[in-house]
Image 1 (cartoon, helix red, strand yellow):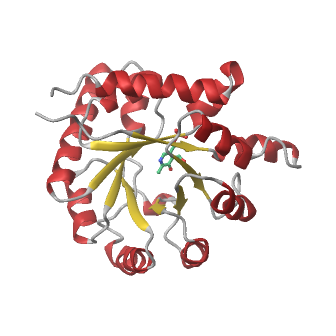
Image 2 (image 1 turned 180 degrees about the vertical axis):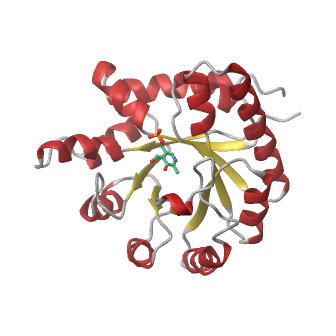
Length: 253
Ligand code: PXP
């Protein structure tokens, strides 16, 4: 057997902006954090421009695109405003995420099944502009099949329910959720989709997810920004990379 594909780390800098916005002004700067994360080994930077601009702002996205040396993944709601910004900014990738409750499945991911007709032209338009589109969905076979039918080249599997179950000591629920993520990643790969994962990951859960060879990218934010308080962002990124490498090493070759 051959080696599993490289597992990329996308560092989400939203919560650097959350801290900055708590006091106004410019400090701490999410673009500076992005550059530090890249120097420490991040393969890309992720930022979510929310409709309410509660953390990342328009100027942060423009600066990230202009100043960082690695791919930018723009997380965005499937709205006309965000599509216009994405087409103007031309990030490497755009991950469509739910922002309002009615856009979500019960697991919290985008409801690609219920929103098929809204998503189809957006996936086509962004893809036509050379932006690699990803749908942030639960590891639900119905959602994955619709993502493939929409010709989204990538899905990002929502790991939040699994991380929450683990954190709450719900062992059986966590086991079932991990199996769903594993099976969903296999199904998606068989349907020709590239598979990413994210939400709520820490060193331990990232290591466990890294052992799934179908998953080729993790997007991690809140935990790394929290850890940065204790060890610095560069150190947190390096420890995360080491955890991911340990997980990847468990894949049978
Ligand atoms: N992936 C997606 C699509 C997200 O929306 C988020 C949260 O913004 C993340 C990954 C990162 O989640 P966390 O901040 O919990 O690591």
